[in-house]
Image (cartoon, rainbow over all chains, first blue to last red; front, side):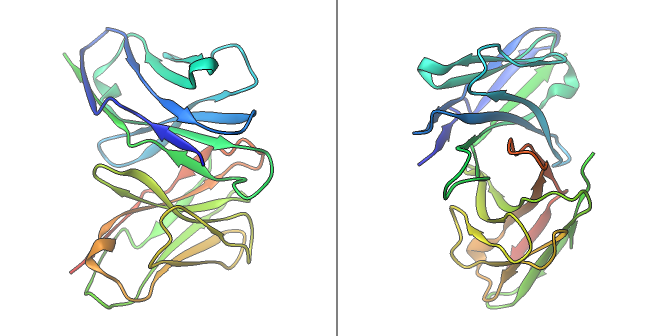
Length: 118
Length: 113
């Protein structure tokens, strides 16, 4: 069974600094997909970035990047030059497999609250 | 950008009542999902579907039924609502390829008194 764990409940940082949020996962599959989503104060949930397990290069989108450490089953989200509007809840998620009973199923972690202070 | 619309946005019902939450997506996505969000639990998958007439069981299905009537419409049914089902419910759909990036609706806040 797939499992996603975010151990950091909340993080506080100063504006314009770099922050890393941790996520570890469990899977039996050799091929899987890892995602990070952001939930704003209004409740809106938006997709940020994805890492395909078969790719060695870390994904980067804007000021978001990933630290993918496959041997450790770890996918950290790095936000550089943080802004006040980055304050939100960040969720890590995983989809495993191409076929079978869990095809299409995404499992989320419990989320990490990020507070960016001026 | 995918458009996922949930209705109602807020709902209050009593214990034992019937509730139907609706979700419509307008971008021809195959997969649709219902999640509930509770403090301390994150997002938990209730049911999902990969097409009209299909239903897959999620991780917390007890007390919920779902039905996918068309590719666009996915409904969540609570036939005997209980206070434990008070939660924020999100519908989502995923893009046509197999990587399943989700696009979420705005959420429905349900209170069961």
